[in-house]
Length: 192
Image (cartoon, rainbow, N blue to C red):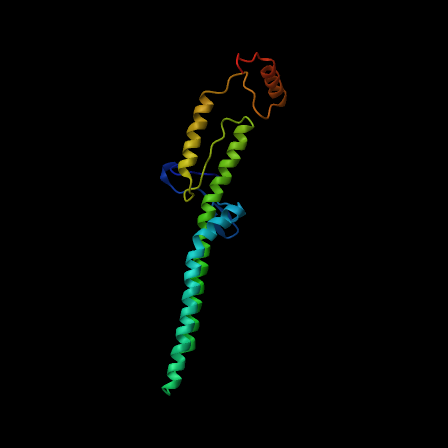
């Protein structure tokens, strides 16, 4: 049994229901895909991660240069530094792990934007199809709750004040053709 929730929507303030999938308990409203809108998410990840990744790559290069210089100075002084390569390697691996964490975090943030954007688009398609009871429901950690709440408020108003009977939706081809025919036969104002 799955159930979508939005902020403050769970009964008694408890977290959303969970379902069992194999041996792992997961939230009932979990998305199946991490990549929802590849173009949008790629732009978000790139915008969020490239400065940090550039800084980390620069730090690795600088660390390599300084380690090499320190090794040369040690050789000139007749001293060995056997742990210097391990220090460089350990630091470089840690910096690469930080870079991977930055990219993963950016991807998660993009997921929290692209998922709600996709959900809002689907609700708008349902409304365009005539389903005025459709509402946007987002998960607790998602972004765009303000946009979803505003859209839901407008949809509430639209449900309470439905369009007039003569209103032609874009999907109603015969009604749209009648409306176009009536507009073509309407008298034009003087001076037009």
